[in-house]
Image (tube, rainbow, N blue to C red):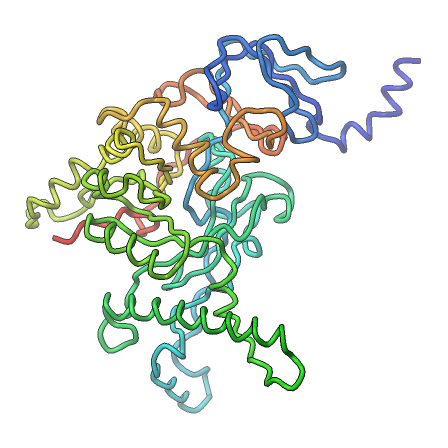
Length: 440
């Protein structure tokens, strides 16, 4: 009779894949929300953490994983990436198609009303794919979540908190929109905006336009009869939607400038980069801005000219940038790490080791990869710690993740088990995520 039942239910079990009820028993658990547990059990049901603790009873029917010798962390979060977003399609050829006449030249930019390099309406939630770039690599390194953004242009688009798993794009999205990604990219003189001053003026005008647009829209919604209908503007709508903005801040002067700029724009602000964050502990203390530290520390080009002139300031930044995290921790400034284009665990651990060697505590490093990014993006009620009721995103290793010899055994993403893939050699340098050098 038992064999008959097993045969009858076998197709259903095959379709179900990974069991929906999992217990990791007897592991070293790092909950982040409280002290480490030397021997504890984590129970996951239907993608949610059901129980955690040293005396947790294992429910009947659970798939039990022996946790002896394993360490369980909350799933790591990459706080700024373009993970899962396919590369932009190549631009159309500049010339006319064969056999056609000369193509008319595009009209010159007239100014802010053209909104060049603004695609604020783009949503990472609409673009991500489970097989998109860096998803498998980050997951194999121990990351279960990324905050992913379109990254082309000045106002590049709206990010989303995504889980690095699932069979469909809709399975990945945890929260959207997370923030608006803004850069200070210029088009060079001859284009608009062609300078840093022009870019800042351009962004300022965009947000002034957004304030006016919102006022007019609100007035119209309250008194529609007989009033002229305001035109819909997708660029402005895209600016108004996200609850916070990301602003670039590598140098000390930029950190100060962008803190002031975010306040002027009236938006909750998150600063990213922080190459000179080691000089900004007092400045950032109590500033009430989010801080994202790039793990790809500034360094010399691997194939650069060894005889090229390098300023003392540049050398100073290359040496001291890894101490940024320790300085921020000492000053009591919450911060999160982002990968900056590093996708292999080997590269990430080596970068993290430089921060640890510079004085960052291991507990602080774990927080910067778990609860702190979750708090910055407003999803700490769902991610970042191992607690009952939170999403079952777990990183499971055979030791301390920060040691090079440690291996990621598997991760759980929304309660589904994924095993790491072999590390691939790093791709040729293409500039993605490269930490900006401080001005020479």
